[in-house]
Image 1 (cartoon, rainbow, N blue to C red):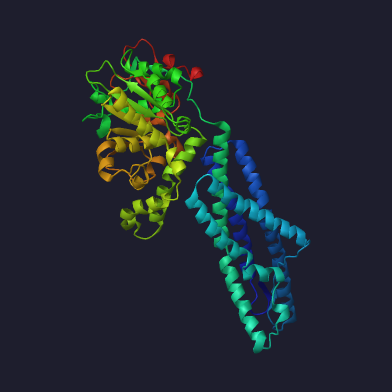
Image 2 (cartoon, rainbow, N blue to C red):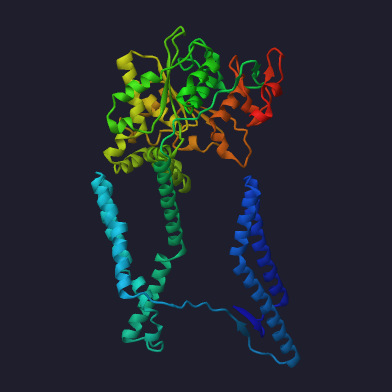
Length: 560
């Protein structure tokens, strides 16, 4: 509404300032989105398309600006008329009204058909499916919540009155007694109720929930379509004639691991050894031995894929077909018998679903703690709340949880093969699984960028304790890596630097980047270096041991 004449009329300065502010606001919105895309290193085509789409979406706003310009001319004309007439006039206002019209109306048969399909597809079919798969707790919860929601939707007075239309045409505004006053009060209550139940907050939550459902369906369809991957088919490309010296200053305290964590006979390379072995879990089995030989040398470490296959053959069919992937490394030539189980991290849709299954409740509780005032005081009870939520999980889902198979594997190695000095490692999801299995079996576990287990510790079978996590687990946490911030850290962890660009925090989760970081900071200490540390992650070039070739000769740009 704009007052255009009279003592309360808008001045030309007010009109111009409103017009300019609107233009600046729309322009800044477009520039902000475009700048964000450029900061995220989006391709020029993507930046152009999204910017054009944003401009098209703001065309109605520019139309409103044009109408504001026409309004300013009307204001000027009215004010000129007042001056010419020389007599004070009553204030006049210009306003805009929006009104919705129903062009077509659905027939009764179509409405009943849509109601039947909605109940069948969105209520009965999911309910029957939940009961058939044995998910009784979720089915009962869905049964009662669906009934309550149906009553609120189909028997809502707000929806009924909205369908019938406003009550103004039936009420006498001058009569406050009898039925008219009663229904006028009902009308006011309806307006208040509609603002609450159909306001922007409810729409926002509906959009957020719908986005989560669509994202979950996309992950599930991707997992079902693509299936599990056997691993990356590439070689290590190690440089044995180059090295990184230890950097000046205080190194990471965990560069040298002791007390049973490091590989026997090589305590000074503990951190880089575990980082390398956690990354090796992603490699295809036909290249694994090559990776081990490149790192430790010939005959030091053995890939015991035969034992992994032997163990899987003992499992029931539903467990043997699980998408979890792990490797067993044995070190027969060392002074102390030593074995490492390396568990692969998230690599496909099934792995992502496992992440959500194990840690979604803990992550949500962390967000709630961050939002509510003094949220930290509720930390001691979060583990019990998360455990109560996990009650809804079916026994079928618990049986296919990845950590159950890795825990069985470690126990099988102890009982059947007399392996006692077993350690675990893994990256991302594999790191989280190694922390769980290490706590359940009492074996040392070193994770790289793994989600933690302090809040969710009671949801596992068997549950794990705080003492077990503090005694047997160690997590390597790159800065700005979002994954190891899921759940709360246990007592033992090592933060390392992430030197990726500020606009790419996801790259901090890359296992090979973390390997380059510990190699560069701790020093290679006799272990090989890699071309990708410099070519892909912009670390300084390693130094040549004998000067027989330069780094550019060892790592040609066109071959990386």
